[in-house]
Amino acid sequence: MITQRPVHFGDVVRNAIVFNMRNQRESLVSTDALLRDVSRLFDLLHERQIDYLLVGGIAMLHYVEGRNTEDINLIVALTSLRQLPEIDIDSQDNSFARGKFQALQIDFLLSGNPLFAEVQHNYATVQAFTERDIPCATVEGLMLLKLYALPSLYRQGNFMRVGLLENDIASLIQAYQPDLPLLFEKLDQHLNSSDMGELQTIVAEIQQRVERFRRGVGPAVARGLNGDTSSAPGESCQSRMPKDGCEQERRTPIGCAPTQSEFAPLTPPRRKPSRWRPAPSTPLPSADLCHHCGTGGSLLSPRPPRRRKRQYETCRYCPT
Image (cartoon, rainbow, N blue to C red; front, side):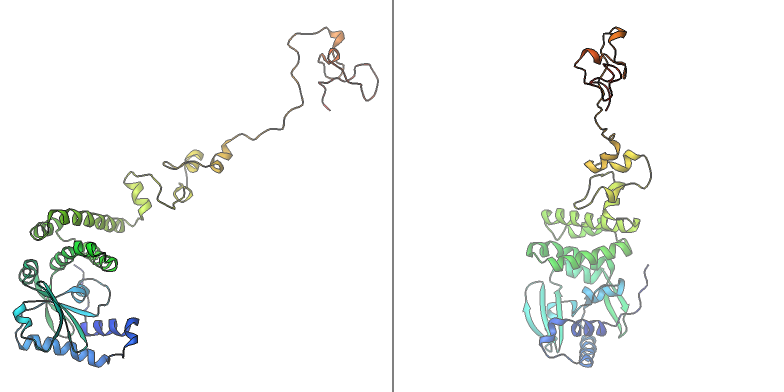
Protein backbone atom coordinates (compact mmCIF):
# COMPACT_ATOMS: atom_id res chain seq x y z
CA MET A 1 0.00 0.00 0.00
CA ILE A 2 1.30 3.44 -0.91
CA THR A 3 1.53 5.86 1.97
CA GLN A 4 0.89 9.53 1.28
CA ARG A 5 1.56 12.48 3.51
CA PRO A 6 -1.63 14.21 4.73
CA VAL A 7 -3.14 16.50 2.10
CA HIS A 8 -4.01 20.07 2.99
CA PHE A 9 -6.91 20.54 0.59
CA GLY A 10 -7.18 24.22 1.44
CA ASP A 11 -3.68 24.67 0.00
CA VAL A 12 -4.59 22.50 -3.01
CA VAL A 13 -7.56 24.67 -3.95
CA ARG A 14 -5.71 27.90 -3.20
CA ASN A 15 -2.70 26.95 -5.35
CA ALA A 16 -4.90 25.81 -8.25
CA ILE A 17 -6.81 29.12 -8.28
CA VAL A 18 -3.83 31.40 -7.73
CA PHE A 19 -1.63 29.76 -10.39
CA ASN A 20 -4.36 29.46 -13.02
CA MET A 21 -3.56 32.22 -15.51
CA ARG A 22 -7.16 32.33 -16.71
CA ASN A 23 -8.08 33.82 -13.35
CA GLN A 24 -5.69 36.73 -13.83
CA ARG A 25 -8.36 38.74 -15.65
CA GLU A 26 -10.30 38.90 -12.38
CA SER A 27 -9.12 40.29 -9.09
CA LEU A 28 -7.09 37.70 -7.23
CA VAL A 29 -8.79 36.23 -4.22
CA SER A 30 -6.94 36.52 -0.95
CA THR A 31 -5.21 33.24 -0.16
CA ASP A 32 -6.07 33.62 3.49
CA ALA A 33 -9.74 34.07 2.54
CA LEU A 34 -9.67 30.83 0.53
CA LEU A 35 -8.29 28.90 3.47
CA ARG A 36 -10.98 30.36 5.72
CA ASP A 37 -13.71 29.46 3.22
CA VAL A 38 -12.56 25.84 3.04
CA SER A 39 -12.46 25.56 6.81
CA ARG A 40 -15.86 27.25 7.18
CA LEU A 41 -17.47 24.94 4.60
CA PHE A 42 -16.54 21.77 6.45
CA ASP A 43 -17.48 23.37 9.75
CA LEU A 44 -20.98 23.92 8.33
CA LEU A 45 -21.22 20.34 7.12
CA HIS A 46 -20.24 19.09 10.56
CA GLU A 47 -22.46 21.47 12.52
CA ARG A 48 -25.57 20.61 10.49
CA GLN A 49 -24.74 16.91 10.45
CA ILE A 50 -24.73 16.67 6.70
CA ASP A 51 -24.03 13.16 5.38
CA TYR A 52 -21.43 13.73 2.65
CA LEU A 53 -18.53 11.98 0.93
CA LEU A 54 -15.45 13.67 -0.51
CA VAL A 55 -14.65 12.54 -4.08
CA GLY A 56 -12.91 14.02 -7.11
CA GLY A 57 -9.42 15.46 -7.44
CA ILE A 58 -8.80 16.20 -3.76
CA ALA A 59 -9.77 12.65 -2.78
CA MET A 60 -7.41 11.38 -5.51
CA LEU A 61 -4.53 13.34 -4.00
CA HIS A 62 -4.86 11.32 -0.82
CA TYR A 63 -4.02 8.12 -2.74
CA VAL A 64 -1.67 9.18 -5.54
CA GLU A 65 0.26 12.26 -6.55
CA GLY A 66 -1.73 14.21 -9.05
CA ARG A 67 -2.90 17.51 -10.36
CA ASN A 68 -4.29 20.53 -8.54
CA THR A 69 -8.01 21.10 -8.63
CA GLU A 70 -9.96 24.31 -8.18
CA ASP A 71 -13.21 22.76 -7.00
CA ILE A 72 -14.43 20.45 -4.26
CA ASN A 73 -16.52 17.41 -5.18
CA LEU A 74 -19.02 16.01 -2.68
CA ILE A 75 -21.69 13.32 -2.78
CA VAL A 76 -24.73 14.54 -0.84
CA ALA A 77 -28.46 14.03 -0.82
CA LEU A 78 -30.71 16.70 -2.30
CA THR A 79 -32.44 17.17 1.04
CA SER A 80 -29.07 17.81 2.69
CA LEU A 81 -28.18 20.36 0.04
CA ARG A 82 -31.30 22.33 0.95
CA GLN A 83 -29.95 22.66 4.48
CA LEU A 84 -27.07 24.77 3.18
CA PRO A 85 -28.60 28.06 2.02
CA GLU A 86 -25.15 29.67 2.24
CA ILE A 87 -24.24 27.85 -0.99
CA ASP A 88 -25.44 29.60 -4.14
CA ILE A 89 -26.60 26.94 -6.63
CA ASP A 90 -25.77 27.86 -10.23
CA SER A 91 -27.11 24.75 -12.00
CA GLN A 92 -28.83 21.51 -11.04
CA ASP A 93 -30.30 18.38 -12.61
CA ASN A 94 -31.28 14.92 -11.36
CA SER A 95 -27.71 13.78 -10.66
CA PHE A 96 -25.52 16.87 -10.42
CA ALA A 97 -25.50 20.37 -8.98
CA ARG A 98 -22.93 23.14 -9.03
CA GLY A 99 -22.68 26.02 -6.60
CA LYS A 100 -20.37 28.51 -4.93
CA PHE A 101 -19.55 29.07 -1.30
CA GLN A 102 -17.81 32.42 -1.05
CA ALA A 103 -14.87 31.99 -3.48
CA LEU A 104 -15.07 28.18 -3.54
CA GLN A 105 -16.47 26.22 -6.49
CA ILE A 106 -18.34 23.09 -5.33
CA ASP A 107 -19.62 20.24 -7.52
CA PHE A 108 -22.30 18.06 -5.92
CA LEU A 109 -23.06 14.49 -6.97
CA LEU A 110 -26.61 13.88 -5.80
CA SER A 111 -27.31 10.55 -4.15
CA GLY A 112 -30.56 10.28 -6.11
CA ASN A 113 -28.33 8.60 -8.70
CA PRO A 114 -28.18 4.89 -7.68
CA LEU A 115 -24.44 4.57 -8.39
CA PHE A 116 -23.60 7.68 -6.36
CA ALA A 117 -25.68 6.37 -3.47
CA GLU A 118 -23.91 2.99 -3.61
CA VAL A 119 -20.49 4.65 -3.56
CA GLN A 120 -21.50 6.84 -0.62
CA HIS A 121 -22.69 3.90 1.48
CA ASN A 122 -20.44 1.00 0.41
CA TYR A 123 -17.18 2.61 -0.76
CA ALA A 124 -16.50 5.15 1.98
CA THR A 125 -13.75 5.50 4.56
CA VAL A 126 -12.47 8.22 6.88
CA GLN A 127 -9.14 9.75 5.86
CA ALA A 128 -6.94 12.10 7.86
CA PHE A 129 -6.38 15.38 6.05
CA THR A 130 -4.38 18.23 7.51
CA GLU A 131 -7.47 20.18 8.50
CA ARG A 132 -9.53 17.31 9.93
CA ASP A 133 -10.69 13.72 9.42
CA ILE A 134 -13.05 13.66 6.44
CA PRO A 135 -15.27 10.94 4.92
CA CYS A 136 -13.59 10.05 1.64
CA ALA A 137 -14.23 7.58 -1.17
CA THR A 138 -12.06 4.48 -1.35
CA VAL A 139 -9.92 3.58 -4.36
CA GLU A 140 -12.70 1.34 -5.69
CA GLY A 141 -15.26 4.11 -5.17
CA LEU A 142 -13.16 6.60 -7.12
CA MET A 143 -12.65 4.04 -9.89
CA LEU A 144 -16.41 3.46 -10.16
CA LEU A 145 -17.14 7.19 -10.46
CA LYS A 146 -14.43 7.84 -13.05
CA LEU A 147 -15.31 4.81 -15.17
CA TYR A 148 -18.99 5.79 -15.00
CA ALA A 149 -18.19 9.29 -16.31
CA LEU A 150 -15.97 8.24 -19.24
CA PRO A 151 -18.64 7.24 -21.83
CA SER A 152 -20.52 10.50 -21.32
CA LEU A 153 -17.35 12.58 -21.70
CA TYR A 154 -16.48 10.74 -24.92
CA ARG A 155 -19.92 11.55 -26.34
CA GLN A 156 -19.48 15.21 -25.37
CA GLY A 157 -16.08 15.30 -27.12
CA ASN A 158 -14.42 16.68 -24.00
CA PHE A 159 -10.87 15.65 -24.85
CA MET A 160 -9.15 17.34 -21.89
CA ARG A 161 -11.49 15.83 -19.30
CA VAL A 162 -11.19 12.39 -20.89
CA GLY A 163 -7.40 12.63 -20.71
CA LEU A 164 -7.49 13.64 -17.04
CA LEU A 165 -9.85 10.83 -16.06
CA GLU A 166 -7.93 8.18 -18.00
CA ASN A 167 -4.71 9.32 -16.34
CA ASP A 168 -6.38 9.08 -12.90
CA ILE A 169 -7.61 5.56 -13.71
CA ALA A 170 -4.16 4.49 -14.91
CA SER A 171 -2.56 5.87 -11.74
CA LEU A 172 -4.97 3.99 -9.47
CA ILE A 173 -4.55 0.73 -11.44
CA GLN A 174 -0.77 1.01 -11.32
CA ALA A 175 -0.63 1.80 -7.59
CA TYR A 176 -3.43 -0.35 -6.14
CA GLN A 177 -4.44 -3.06 -8.68
CA PRO A 178 -8.21 -2.85 -7.95
CA ASP A 179 -10.51 -5.75 -8.83
CA LEU A 180 -11.63 -4.59 -12.27
CA PRO A 181 -14.00 -7.51 -13.04
CA LEU A 182 -15.91 -6.75 -9.84
CA LEU A 183 -16.10 -3.05 -10.76
CA PHE A 184 -17.39 -3.91 -14.23
CA GLU A 185 -20.03 -6.11 -12.63
CA LYS A 186 -21.20 -3.13 -10.56
CA LEU A 187 -21.15 -0.76 -13.52
CA ASP A 188 -23.12 -3.20 -15.68
CA GLN A 189 -26.18 -2.33 -13.57
CA HIS A 190 -25.87 1.38 -14.43
CA LEU A 191 -24.59 1.48 -18.05
CA ASN A 192 -26.02 0.09 -21.26
CA SER A 193 -24.30 -2.73 -23.14
CA SER A 194 -22.80 -0.41 -25.78
CA ASP A 195 -21.17 1.83 -23.17
CA MET A 196 -19.91 -1.21 -21.27
CA GLY A 197 -18.26 -2.64 -24.36
CA GLU A 198 -16.50 0.63 -25.14
CA LEU A 199 -15.50 1.07 -21.49
CA GLN A 200 -13.90 -2.38 -21.33
CA THR A 201 -11.94 -1.61 -24.49
CA ILE A 202 -10.67 1.66 -23.00
CA VAL A 203 -9.65 -0.01 -19.74
CA ALA A 204 -7.85 -2.77 -21.66
CA GLU A 205 -5.78 -0.11 -23.44
CA ILE A 206 -5.01 1.58 -20.11
CA GLN A 207 -3.89 -1.75 -18.67
CA GLN A 208 -1.50 -2.22 -21.60
CA ARG A 209 0.04 1.17 -20.83
CA VAL A 210 0.44 0.23 -17.18
CA GLU A 211 2.00 -3.11 -18.11
CA ARG A 212 4.51 -1.42 -20.42
CA PHE A 213 5.42 0.93 -17.60
CA ARG A 214 5.95 -1.94 -15.19
CA ARG A 215 8.26 -3.71 -17.64
CA GLY A 216 10.10 -0.48 -18.31
CA VAL A 217 9.74 -0.65 -22.08
CA GLY A 218 8.36 1.69 -24.69
CA PRO A 219 5.65 0.98 -27.29
CA ALA A 220 8.12 -0.16 -30.00
CA VAL A 221 9.84 -2.67 -27.74
CA ALA A 222 6.52 -3.83 -26.29
CA ARG A 223 5.29 -4.69 -29.81
CA GLY A 224 8.38 -6.80 -30.35
CA LEU A 225 7.81 -8.65 -27.08
CA ASN A 226 4.24 -9.38 -28.13
CA GLY A 227 5.34 -10.74 -31.51
CA ASP A 228 4.43 -7.64 -33.52
CA THR A 229 7.41 -6.73 -35.66
CA SER A 230 5.82 -4.00 -37.76
CA SER A 231 7.29 -0.53 -37.61
CA ALA A 232 5.41 2.26 -35.92
CA PRO A 233 4.74 5.48 -37.89
CA GLY A 234 7.96 7.48 -37.99
CA GLU A 235 10.03 4.59 -36.65
CA SER A 236 13.06 3.76 -38.80
CA CYS A 237 14.72 0.40 -39.24
CA GLN A 238 17.94 1.79 -37.79
CA SER A 239 16.18 2.54 -34.48
CA ARG A 240 15.27 -1.14 -34.19
CA MET A 241 18.58 -2.49 -35.54
CA PRO A 242 20.17 -5.11 -33.27
CA LYS A 243 23.54 -4.31 -31.80
CA ASP A 244 25.05 -7.67 -32.72
CA GLY A 245 24.30 -10.59 -34.98
CA CYS A 246 24.98 -11.33 -38.61
CA GLU A 247 25.37 -8.67 -41.25
CA GLN A 248 22.06 -9.50 -42.89
CA GLU A 249 20.13 -9.18 -39.60
CA ARG A 250 21.66 -5.78 -38.92
CA ARG A 251 20.75 -4.49 -42.33
CA THR A 252 17.26 -5.90 -42.76
CA PRO A 253 15.37 -6.29 -39.44
CA ILE A 254 12.27 -8.44 -39.58
CA GLY A 255 9.23 -6.50 -40.74
CA CYS A 256 11.22 -3.69 -42.38
CA ALA A 257 11.62 -3.24 -46.13
CA PRO A 258 15.35 -3.07 -46.94
CA THR A 259 16.54 0.07 -48.64
CA GLN A 260 19.11 0.43 -51.41
CA SER A 261 21.67 1.80 -48.97
CA GLU A 262 21.23 -1.26 -46.77
CA PHE A 263 21.83 -3.66 -49.65
CA ALA A 264 24.72 -1.71 -51.17
CA PRO A 265 27.52 -3.27 -49.08
CA LEU A 266 26.29 -6.75 -50.07
CA THR A 267 26.43 -6.01 -53.85
CA PRO A 268 29.78 -6.83 -55.48
CA PRO A 269 31.53 -3.71 -56.76
CA ARG A 270 31.29 -2.99 -60.45
CA ARG A 271 34.50 -3.68 -62.31
CA LYS A 272 35.88 -1.56 -65.08
CA PRO A 273 35.06 -3.19 -68.46
CA SER A 274 38.03 -5.16 -69.74
CA ARG A 275 39.46 -4.44 -73.16
CA TRP A 276 40.51 -8.05 -73.57
CA ARG A 277 38.71 -10.25 -76.04
CA PRO A 278 38.30 -14.00 -75.75
CA ALA A 279 40.68 -16.14 -77.80
CA PRO A 280 39.22 -17.90 -80.86
CA SER A 281 37.74 -21.31 -80.13
CA THR A 282 39.47 -22.85 -83.18
CA PRO A 283 43.23 -23.02 -82.78
CA LEU A 284 45.14 -21.34 -85.61
CA PRO A 285 48.49 -22.29 -87.10
CA SER A 286 51.39 -21.07 -85.08
CA ALA A 287 52.72 -19.13 -88.04
CA ASP A 288 49.61 -16.87 -87.95
CA LEU A 289 49.70 -16.10 -84.19
CA CYS A 290 50.41 -12.63 -82.93
CA HIS A 291 53.97 -12.39 -81.67
CA HIS A 292 52.87 -10.11 -78.79
CA CYS A 293 49.72 -11.63 -77.25
CA GLY A 294 49.70 -15.08 -78.75
CA THR A 295 46.21 -14.78 -80.30
CA GLY A 296 45.13 -15.04 -83.91
CA GLY A 297 45.00 -11.33 -84.39
CA SER A 298 47.17 -11.46 -87.43
CA LEU A 299 44.23 -12.87 -89.43
CA LEU A 300 41.68 -10.24 -88.19
CA SER A 301 42.41 -6.68 -89.28
CA PRO A 302 45.79 -6.21 -87.62
CA ARG A 303 46.85 -2.73 -86.63
CA PRO A 304 50.30 -1.43 -87.46
CA PRO A 305 52.89 -1.77 -84.70
CA ARG A 306 54.39 1.25 -82.97
CA ARG A 307 57.85 -0.04 -83.64
CA ARG A 308 58.12 -2.14 -86.74
CA LYS A 309 60.35 -4.91 -85.51
CA ARG A 310 58.11 -7.48 -87.14
CA GLN A 311 55.16 -7.16 -89.45
CA TYR A 312 52.54 -8.26 -86.87
CA GLU A 313 54.05 -7.31 -83.53
CA THR A 314 50.65 -6.25 -82.11
CA CYS A 315 47.06 -6.92 -83.09
CA ARG A 316 43.52 -5.78 -82.23
CA TYR A 317 43.43 -8.09 -79.22
CA CYS A 318 46.59 -6.75 -77.68
CA PRO A 319 46.20 -4.43 -74.65
CA THR A 320 47.15 -0.82 -75.05
